[in-house]
Image 1: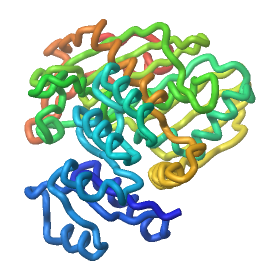
Image 2: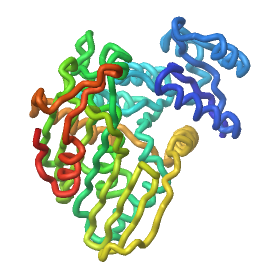
Image 3: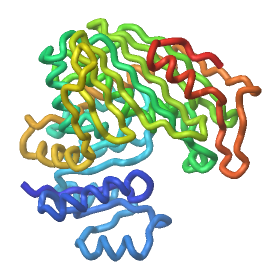
Amino acid sequence: MKINAALVGINGYARVHLNTLKGLMKSGEAALSAAVVLPRERTPEDMDYFRSLGCEVFDSVDDLLAKRADSLDLICLPTGIASHEPLTATCLAHGVNVLVEKPAAGSLAAVDRMRRAEAASSCFVAVGFQHIYSREFQKIKKELAAGRYGKLKSIAVMGIWPRGDAYYARNNWAGKIRTAAGDLVLDSPANNAFAHYLNLPLFLAGRHFACSAHPIELDGQLYRARRSIEYFDTCAIRLRTEDGVVIRACFSHASNQTVQPGIRIQCTEALILIDFSDNTCRICDGNGALRETLEISSPHPDMFRDVAAKVSDRSVFTCTLDIAREHTWCMDELYRRFVPRDVPQNLISVEKESGQVVIRGLEESFRAFFETGAKLVF
């Protein structure tokens, strides 16, 4: 079935949505019939492209829905965190299915309002935690849930992505707890850039395939190296799920060295090592001998295909608001229970050209937490 889709925004991460939709248009799986592009963001080349498709461009979501809701199957919302709840609710009220960017929303209360709006409609909401749509990770999840690797004991993840002045100046809510209007966004590595890499372990630890694990214990170390932001740029999080699985996650933007995310899944009869620097998954037996290697393909095409397929077949698996809620639960709990601490000034340096803040010894502290669960020491 060919679906009629609309896209809200074309800059920033919305470009990923646009480029992936182009693939679905080429294969005949989707048509992009409407888009919201703010006047200040319009360029001649983009407008020429939309005209060539017969894609109507609007100034706002309200205008788009007022004129085109009846002809749309899906609307893609790669928009800011604070907009996720109101835009999703508006689309559902107009009878349009939604693919909303991660995280689902900035607060648990907002996610729950979205869930109620979805339940009251005839439409669905899929969340853009793209790794959940990866065929390789779905295979691993099914085998974990079936007990193929024995009992799941722990999952650890770490990642370091430098982010300088430009990153924190890209909008008016980067690094903030709330927007100027007072809406929670809790913008941090764990709720934005690395949100996928906390959500994925929660999903993998879920008891059944189509659910994520619910933590019953949470401990957090939140640090702020960049003094100009409100919330944290470095963290270590430890969770324990209802089934006793321990999840450790550490993320930071305060470095001049990139460490691509890695995930270590420890089971009683296997060790699974996921390395995003080369996009491989190595499955070892209980003695550490390599059993299987999987190449992790880009999940974006699978995500869009699955969401498009769900328009006509509600049995198709997507990342639901219920799944995404567990990630937001963690963010909500961190905010309520833990206050970010400033990293001592004598451990920090700042690169003048980029404004990159660097914590000395960060990678060593992260690796100790990742491998053994040792506390971060700053």
